[in-house]
Image 1 (cartoon, helix red, strand yellow):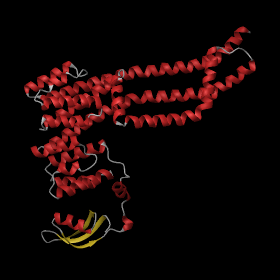
Image 2 (cartoon, rainbow, N blue to C red):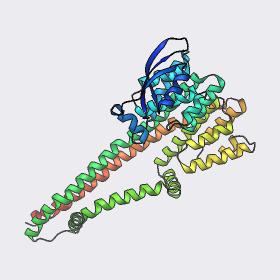
Image 3 (cartoon, rainbow, N blue to C red):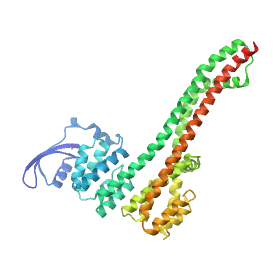
Image 4 (cartoon, helix red, strand yellow):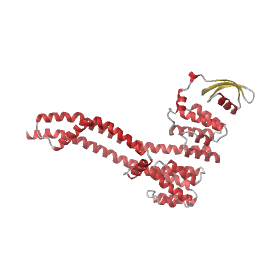
Length: 407
């Protein structure tokens, strides 16, 4: 039997005749799903092969694009609202599934519904689906255990909002300099390939002596004209090789260490990751997750391998019975003032609250670092490109000015 929507006619638990459609892998699966809903099927019609949902088929075959943080955040916030309103979890998932437009997320919700209907917990169902990471599932598990799932989902939504805001700030800060750099390179290339050769023809006809700076620009122009067809594919191959290298274990470690030491940008990397770590840990602890388990999950969420390695040493120290403050103080890039704040939070039993304040401090410092980087990069690029283009133009017009002066 084919997978798809099965039409059925049956009898409900109270003896009423019911009919409708249900998504199932085959007829046996459809009947099993209906029995869980208290419906005994009398007649079942298989889906028409011509009625295959192309979008669903693409998801099943792995061709569809997975849902992102934006869709997951929307789902999380809506689920928290429904649960807070007292709607049963199965009904919540059914409502969200029917209104969800992203096919990948829609299929995930349906799979979660199937697991929950079979007696499994919500976090068990979510942990099987791509897109619901360890942090998300652990917080849902803690929320279910404590009976505060709606509150935890709100915290998750706020946490994802903060993360996305930080990413947008960094991307926004880099957009303008990138555009200026690309346009500058294109203009420089155009000058070298199309404008400089025109001047070369004029200079050859005049027969006058060519200044050293002009000859250098002409040589660069000749190089661009001769090797452009080699430079473009070579650059593409080099970029591809570099990308593959930083995706390897050793390459990722080397790249992460390099970015941490980069001027200005390294400060953003460090404080951004520490902000994420502090807020994640605060969210986990406030949900009732044990400190060691929370640290392990936080480490998994850190993208930078060097910072992750340093935080593993913090976790190992806590496992041995030490306070979190002592190992954090041994991390060179962890500010002493912030470490003192953590120490106060730990001694007063308000570590989660203090970590939220620590995260706020890191986020403010990250924003300041982004502004500093933008204020430094933009004028540097403009001055550099302006100087480059100005040098080319001066080099081309210099022989003309010398000729006019000699005349």
